[in-house]
Length: 284
Image (cartoon, rainbow, N blue to C red):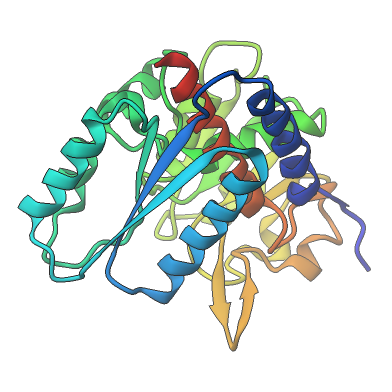
């Protein structure tokens, strides 16, 4: 029987989207604009871009899709990014990952102008995030997790937060954000991964457990302290269904709060993309 309260990312994201739409509606002249670059025809990437464009449309943010052949050279892709960097009517640039194997993703992400980096993946923005520089464009998923907790009046200050997963997209920047010395953060953070020894010992000591390891139902009930808050970042497609990194049914019986999958962190990630785009526009 489910005991935990749901951290409803869909509702929180909707509230944020409405606020952004109201802000954009009051703007005079040019509206914020984002350019999506889609290389190849990966079905999942096409779906993600379609969802992001739809979200932009609901807020009045203009979006443009640049679809490129999977065989494009790195040089030609860099030229396209340079053109968008110089375009005064484009506030944000997002290159949908993954890219074809012959293209160096790191090289491409570094080519995006940091002030237009709505994904927050540029090394300058990552470095600013680590330093606690509030001018950083923060990666969308970590920012979405922080915002979702705040929306539900869950403070991380002084709490032990355990993050399982060390990706550059979620785990590392999230740990860097939550450990910062400011009222919104100030957590004690333990960063683990699937190969960490005595992993259950770490996870079961968490006040807030964040699963971002990319393995379905990896976090089980015996790994969670009763009353803990559990945030599931995982998106795993199994037999046509989307399931998270957490064994939801069993973990929900011991947790105090838990995110559903879908409907938890996913909608927040898109909402933060809109927020980052608006911030880029305001800063430019």
